[in-house]
Structures are given as structure tokens and as C-alpha cells.
Image (tube, rainbow, N blue to C red; front, top):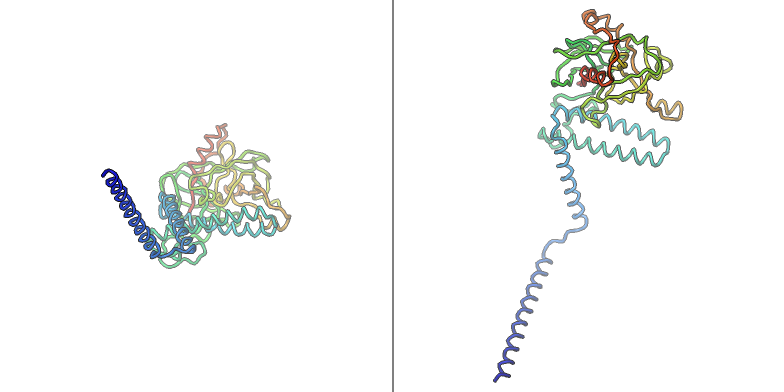
Length: 359
């Protein structure tokens, strides 16, 4: 009897095990059948999906990175990026002519990064405007689409010379401007061009308000090797909108080909520094940052790229220019002769310096 019960128990266990195996097999078959019925994803489709995912992440990154920019700042940033891309292409041509493989790779990488940033800013402007294409984004190519509103054509630096709103910059900064605006610590304000001297690259502007100003001294007393500095807004698309300090020396008492109107300076400046005050150790304006040696011309003439060869219009020319406007020359500050800490000189220059936007 015990043996019969044992055999029955074993038989029952084997039967249950068989049922479990059969059910598992059916489930496996159904699962395989369901998998077979699903559409297969090709490598190309997977690649497209991965690229779309990457693009979405990049778009989110740029939206977050550009969230703090106003619409006007974005338009200005795009304009600067267009300039940077153009300069990058010119630089690539110079490097390609030299045949330096490593330099070509580095320059190509920088150019591609700048193009990507430009496109991202353009897409963000289009997204905010509710447009879906890049064609309505303000550009620097001189062919904006209709209805694109204000567009920044260029920028530079300027500095106040009177407390009631007269300021000086380079003529080439505001040339052909239909509108000029100043970015100050109190906000963005309008300015108008009062007078220009194209021969010496000088421009006098006027705005309304009360501002800190800088004294101008004669450049005749400036000596070779004298310490000078400038505050400006170079390459804002790369370096941002806060003012930048650059310091150096008077490298020559004359400019290119011994032009007596200019100083050659070792102050490291970039596009955007144009129009900035060149101040001495007392904080007096002794010049206006104006130009740098053209790299392509120098390379063609000498076979070498120039390093930190920059120029400033002498302050004596600025004083002569301002004498033609008695209402301004009568309000100029007296030059400073007392010794000052360099930090105080920098602070004074910063308070009087503004970003000039040209439309």
C-alpha cells in the first residue's frame, strides 16, 4: 500500500512538472512569435534615432545656456558670431597657405565649434520669434529678410569725455550707422553722432544723462616704453559683455610706416576694442585704440604672421578734433598729475567706458 502511494505521488509530481514545462514552452513560443511580429530596427534607423536624441540634448543645452540673454543681446551675439566665423575662414585660408597640418586641424576644430554656436544662437532667436527657419534671423550679410526688426551691424567701445554725455569712439565703428545705442551700467540708451573726422578715425557722440568721464592729456609727453592700458569690449560673442582690461607699453612713437598720427602699442586688443580709451599711469587719455596690423598683408609681405602689433590714434589729434566743438572743449576735465594706484586708474576708466552698438 505504501509503495502504491509512493508511486502515485511520483507520478503526480512528474505530471505537474510536465504541465509546467509545456506551459513554459508555450509562453516561450508566444513570446518569440510576438518578437518576430515586431518591426525590425535597421542600423540606419537606430543611427538616425541616436542623432535625433543627441540633437535634442544639444538644443536643450543651448536653450539653458542662452536663457539669460535678452532678445537684443542674442541678436548682437549672432552678429558677432557671423564676424567670428568670417574671420575664422580667413584664418583658415592663411594657415592652409602655410601648409601646417596640425595648425589646420586646430583651426578647423575652432571654426566648426563657432559655426555650431552661431547656428544654435540663430535657432534660439527663431524659436523665440516663433519662426521655424533660419532665414528670418538677422544676419550680417547685408541681406536681412523683411520684418526682422532691429539688427546689430557691428560694435565697438567708447568713453565719456564730459559728464553731460559727450563721448568719443572711432569713426569706423559708427560709419554708415542708422542708429547707435550705448550699453551702460544703467541700461541701454540711444546716442547720436555729432561730428566725425574720417581722416583720423575719430567720432564724437552725444547721449542724455550724467556720466563719469575721463580727462584727455596731450600725447606729446608720452615716452617710448610708457605703461598704458585700455578697457573695452573685445569679441563679446566669445568673451561676454563685461568690460575687459588690457595692459601694455608704448612700443613705438609712430604707427605703420612711421605714421606720426599713431602710437604702436603692445596692449593685446581684439575686434571690439576699437574706440576704447588708451590711458596712462595717471588715468589720462593719451590715445584711442584704433587698429591692428592686418595679418594677411603682413604674411604676404614678410612670410610671417604679426604678433601683437596694434595702434592707437594720439590724443593730441583728439584734442584738435574737439576744439572744433567749443561746447565740448570747454567742459573737458583737467589732466591728472598726481600719482594714483593702478586699481583706481582701472576703476575710473571702467566707469567712463561703454559698449557701442551700431544698427
